[in-house]
Length: 66
Figure 1 (cartoon, rainbow, N blue to C red):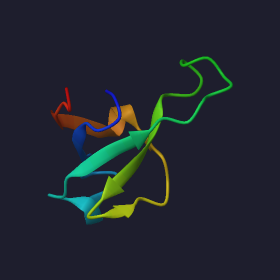
Figure 2: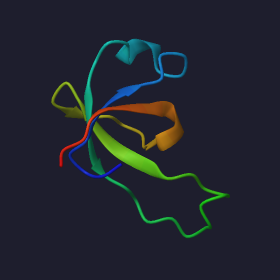
Figure 3: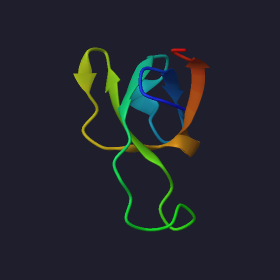
């Protein structure tokens, strides 16, 4: 996944965002190895930044930007 990709969020963990498409904005730098801290993204949904970072495992890629 890379910035600009379009994703849908896991409806189990994010039921309010069911059916909405989000765009990946950035991935914060992690100070721990990836097996301790999964890659998390800042995501824009419906024109607003989602207030929390979201782990890649909780998203489905629907359209790559490139």
